[in-house]
Image 1 (cartoon, rainbow, N blue to C red):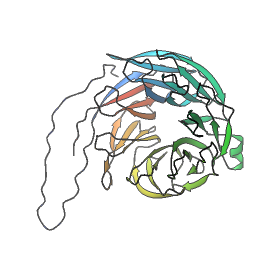
Image 2: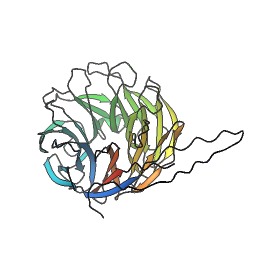
Image 3: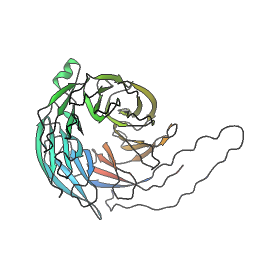
Image 4: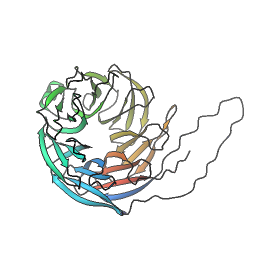
Length: 383
């Protein structure tokens, strides 16, 4: 294991151009593939799970906030000239899962929101701008797994949508999403419940039907489908529309416009490593696109531009394979996976420019080796 400074390896590359002369059309060249240099850093807690990236101490450099399944605290990894220094955050509960960052109280400092399985709550950590946090707990339902932050009722304040992986209602065939509406000062009203399908595991917000209002998309791992909740703009939502993705259970979904039609599409990665690209029709239905093969146990999927060509690429954290898979977008689809070994049992992958070079890097939490992989994007495109 190597612990070292954030750096970039420089090297040269040779490109060979094959010209095809004849009546047949030359095949479309493959897009440039990013190359990464990996470092491993202690996570500060046992079985790290979620990670959020933001400048928590306001020194102009992005930091990391990591939750752990076997720890009652959020650990922050504050960026230094030589890498990261670990700081133990406030107690959040016994089992922290998903974590997101946003300025929920509008004081100009980055805050955190953690889905706490043990306490059945959304834990709001208000940042002080110096790397410290103050925790408050807001009740959700049973086993909150992931959380999204957005202005759901268009009052100018950020609200929370919590995917509760397991609850009493799931015994009757549906799961629940907790909505907590913010007051703009870091406080939240008691939860309002939306009925999803069976065992919702992840939730994302976007305008999925193009009406200018915030909607929600939820992946339900037991019922193997995606639920859309179309917002009315006042914090209420139409009943869910469920669309199957024709695969095995999935714990994660990502959202982004993959086909350039102006509508956010959905990407689901299931536990056998199949990545389902689902094109958004704008009416609560999805048209299946190509299926991509990632590594076994794909527990997290994100979309981001990794090679700087303006197209959204896909990355997955593959728990059983202990790898990360990257799929670079092409004009007609996606290239085959580039696979990188990381620590043991990776759980979550996140994207950010960590060293300020304008390239998107990756951060991976490794639940089995209790550390974090930092993958620095070298920008060494190869065809």
